[in-house]
Amino acid sequence: MNVTAVRVGQQSGYDRFVIEFDGPVPSYQVSTQSSATFTEDASGRTVVLDGKDGVVVTIHGANDQGYSGSTDFKTGYPQLREARRTGSFEAVVHWGLGTSGPACLKVSTLTGPDRLVIDLYPTP
Image 1: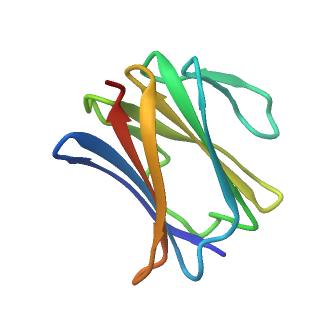
Image 2: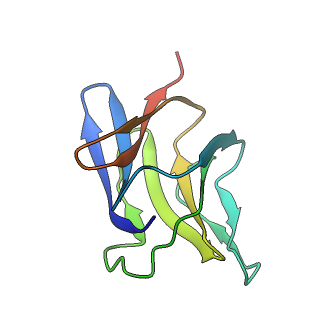
Image 3: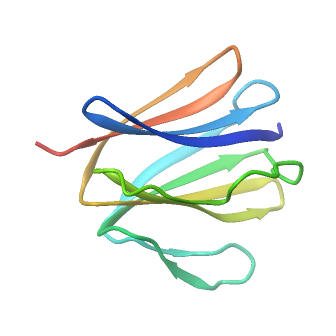
């Protein structure tokens, strides 16, 4: 599957990160981490995103070679501080999300168009 769009948004009470595809959403993993430091694929370079904590988004069987939009969103939102592509190598796409603190995640897939949606809520 090809990544066709990436966007961020602010909703009432939470922030949202969306990756859109040109077909069914491929296999993915979403996990939290206790820092906003990420490693870029292939180069091994360390990048530090805005925020204190992070979320790693891994998409298998996808590429974003045709995607020409932003690969670094500095949002300033309450929970999602920055979203940055940290890799696109051998049909695996990685994004790092820098968060203001630990986040409660709601991960879902939607159709029309096909997309992976990650909602980030502040922890109570």
